[in-house]
Amino acid sequence: MEQQQVSIAKAGVVASLPSRCSVIAAANPKTGHYNMSKSVAENLNMAGPLLSRFDLVFILRDEADTDRDRMISSSIMENFRNSDRAHVTGGDGEKNSGKLADILDQYGNFERVPLKYRLPWVADFQKQPLPMQQIKEYIAYAREYCRPKMTTDAANVLQDYFMKLRDPQNNDQKKDNVPITTRQLEALIRLSQARAKACLRPYVLREDAEDVVELMIESVKQVHTDESGKIDKTRGGAGGKSKKRRIFLEAMINSGKTSVSSMFFRCGMFSL
Image 1 (cartoon, rainbow, N blue to C red):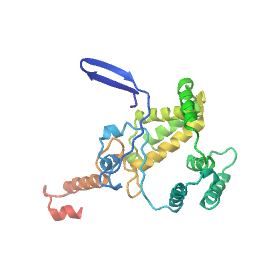
Image 2 (image 1 turned 180 degrees about the horizontal axis):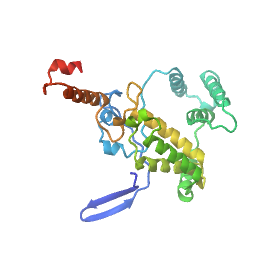
Image 3 (image 1 turned 60 degrees about the vertical axis):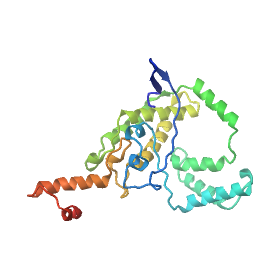
Image 4 (image 1 turned 120 degrees about the horizontal axis):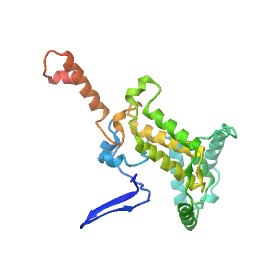
C-alpha cells in the first residue's frame, strides 16, 4: 500500500500496476471486546506486517462518556423524529455549541486551535451535508490538478516529530521508545500532502504538518499504550508479545540467573 502499486505474477505475466487509492478498513476484536493487555494485532487476529502498512490506526472503545453519549443519543433520536437537522434548535445542540465556543475563545487569534476542538465545531456548524455530486467533482479536481509541494517549515515539523519518537530526550524513556521507521515518516508526508490537497493548496504549510502530527500522536497513543497508561513498544503494528507475557519471561530469566537450580516449580512460577 505504501508503494502505491500492485505486483502481479500470474499465468506467466509479471507486471507492476499503479494503484493510487486510499484503503480504509474496520475490524472487530476476535473475542467480542478489546483487551487492553494485548496488542492490536493480537486483538484483531491480523498479521503484524499487514497491520503495519496502515498509516493511522485508531481504537474505538465503547466507554461511558457523558458528552459523547448525549451527542450520540441525540443524533439517533433526531433520525427517528424524521426532522431536518437544519431546523433542530435548542436542547443539547445549543449546549454543545456554547461549550465549543467557550473552548475556542480560550485561544487567541494567532494561536493554533487543536484539531480535536476544531472538528466538533465544524460538525456542529455544518448542519447539512454537502451534495454528493459536488463532493465528487471537488475530489476529482483536487486529484487532477493539485500537486502540493513540501515547504521547509512543514518538513521541519515532521522531521522534529520523527526524531522525537526515534530518540526521546528523556533517558528513562529511551528503552521504551516507539519503534518507528522511515515508513511512518513517509506516512506523515503523504498525510500532509493529502491535507494540503483537500484545501487545494499548491504547498504543504506548517498547519498541515501540525494537524497530521496531532493525528499521529493520537494514533501512537492508542496503539502503544497499555492498560496502565504506559508506553509499551511491543504493541505496535509489527506486533509482538503482550506486555504481561514479556514481563513474565523477563522475570523467569532474572530468577534463573540468581537461582542455584535450573528447574522451575509451579509454586515458584506463580510467585513471579
